[in-house]
Length: 74
Image (cartoon, rainbow, N blue to C red; front, side):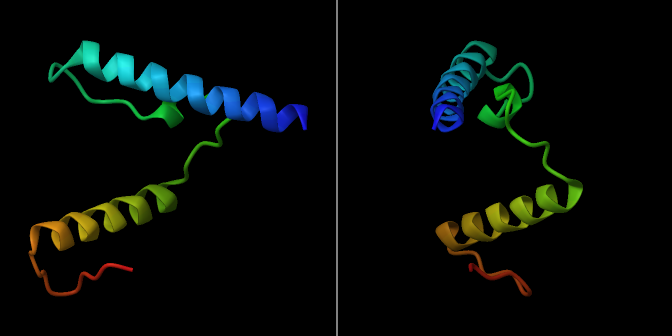
């Protein structure tokens, strides 16, 4: 129970930290995700990063109405 409370608080804090960092940084550098500020979050593997990227691209294509051969929204 205590671990869940600590993890939830870090989820909240890391989201706020990412928001402040990205707002202050502007377009001067790469943006950061809350996961990068979260000390308890597991490091994503290269396979996870590829899956997340492919999913993000397919969702953006669906939102823009672009149909690219071989992509689909799950």
